[in-house]
Image (tube, rainbow, N blue to C red):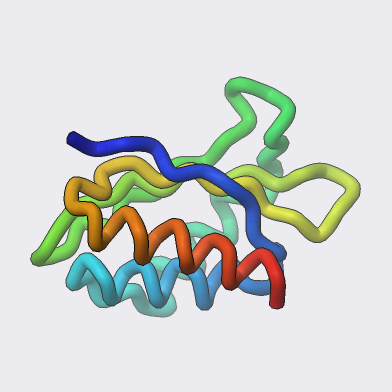
Length: 103
């Protein structure tokens, strides 16, 4: 069963986070994806229920739904990922969140 994996990352790490997460599911994240996400998160606010932006990563191995929102007034991006069905993908996603929060 899929569970929600949530946390935060430094906003400067968002593209790297999405590129690596995409590799885990077999999705080729490219410049068009990045432009779409960058535009989508521009006016987000993690303190508002309708202030989040969601982007699907539909790969050959799995499909993840990544929800993103800025923590207004900081350099932090709140992240929630659903669709990680396997323990391996759950662990990779959680580890990636931790790594992108600290660098």
